[in-house]
Image (cartoon, rainbow, N blue to C red; front, side):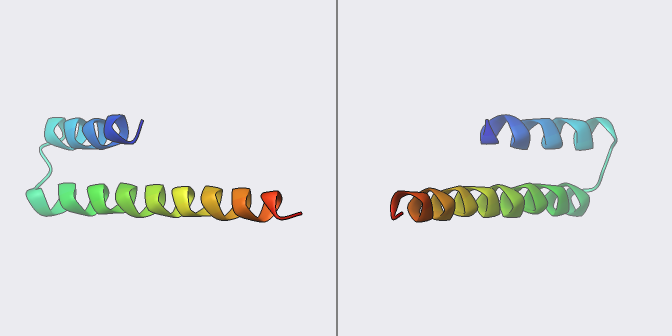
Amino acid sequence: MILFKFWTVWHVSKKAQATIEGRMIFLWGIVGMSTFVLLAKTYISYQMSTI
């Protein structure tokens, strides 16, 4: 799913003729949000299992 997000952002930015800097900004945004979500899910699962 994450790879699909990366491909979608890259493909849309390429169609929009964005510069390489613009593409990297969007990709890093997706990477940051995905990392946050994975860490949050892990933390919540850990906390729920210790109850």
